[in-house]
Length: 390
Image (cartoon, rainbow, N blue to C red; front, side, top):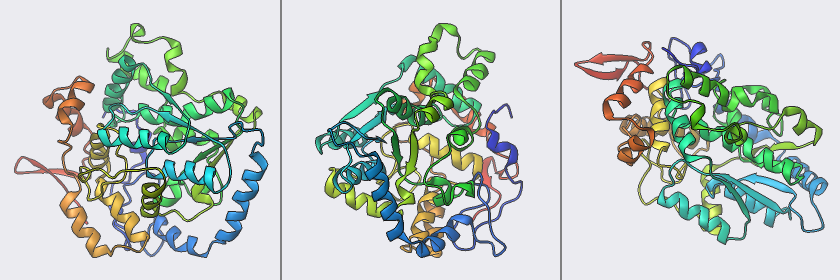
């Protein structure tokens, strides 16, 4: 496979499932204990014993350190208007008396619900700086990423992570607040378990599959998908974090709200419905039973579908695992849902996605099939089937 996704190089060639939830060892960076329980499930139990009142006081002290008393912005919140980021912004403003400046990196193709939630965030009382990248370049990068790392979505997290730090430097804001620590909540590198934020040096591994924007461009140039005529060097600015030494010199801090309070996605939904006008999607998201997460972008469905292809882990699996860990779903119920929805083909918005990526259906399926690991997939009567299922 001609891929630069570094995660695939260390993907286990056998499949085991957590005995408590339904996640498998194919999820990048996840580990299991000697009892066959995944680290996120163990964390769900461990965090019940955390001194959350003490963590709350740490957040109060942190805000006290960085709060400005002259009305200027004092915290950056990367915020789309979705359930998690809107909760973070609203709590920082109305509970902790901070002055958040919200930063949004625009989706590839807004959904109607995503646009409504973004507008409702603004109407609820927030100033937002939104970056719209060069659309010609953004489309090419999404196409390259689909082939190079098996994820059309890859250019978005480049900007989602980098742009807030550019704005923090520009506006002399020392604090950047994200939602949850995904490595701890869902499975990843455990070294950040007791850290309030992500070390900047780890961005490439954690957020970018080990491939940075220049890696994508070089890959695309070698295959004739992009050339110097398609972009200026300045177009790449917000796909890349500012130099690490500049961020450190300015003493800009990265923090997760999930370090300071227990993380419960459904509680976040209820909170933002009440406080920022958040709307659920009128129909469930493709590949799962929920209608409240990752609603912004019409390319979301293909992104989640490719996770199913590469790792055998679909969107439903991710959702039910969170529900099991939050104590609102049994494992048997979860297995039924996964069997029903995981791997559902992303037909919703498909014509628009194909046009955006300049692909036809034959090309789409050719790239999809290229990313089916042989230890996970086999053909049965001409149809692809997972070798191992929950």
